[in-house]
Length: 196
Image 1 (tube, one colour):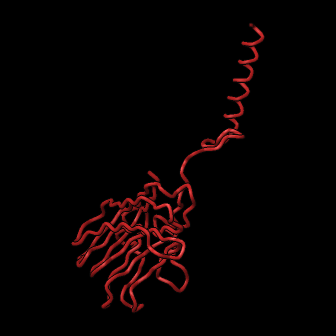
Image 2: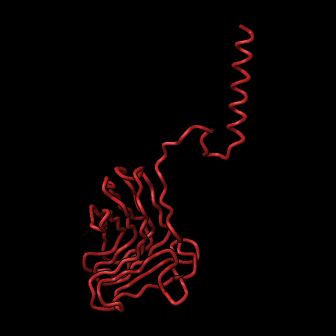
Image 3: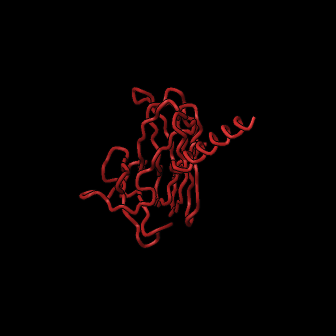
């Protein structure tokens, strides 16, 4: 009986020592973790400088409907929501919408999960459908299979907004970001992505 207790104690001690030697958050050897995969937002605080020759923030794609001069994208260092910079865009032409987005490939573990995109947002004289966070799921041929847009209009100081989406099983690409459908200016900071 004493040998069995001693053996069990040694096994437990060696297991605990092995666990303590691993970095926090890592599974024990031979074990897998069922945590959902993370989508790493690029330049979430807009602190990285813009790409050379472009006003679009590093890590983001700046897109607008048709005419390429209908929206202006720029860095705001005068009134950031957090840190030293925020990313802004505004309507300066006739086209109806513009957006600042990132595209992230979606693997099987993320399909069927609910996700949330949130950020600090500031609006200035936004009209039309409004501005806010956008989540758009695309299928294998680029077709839209689901989307969520949470717009607001008017003028408001920095406040946290969010949009949630259930990722369909046939999703291959998740577009996430912020859209303006109408006139005015929207500024974004402290972007976060969560798997719920």
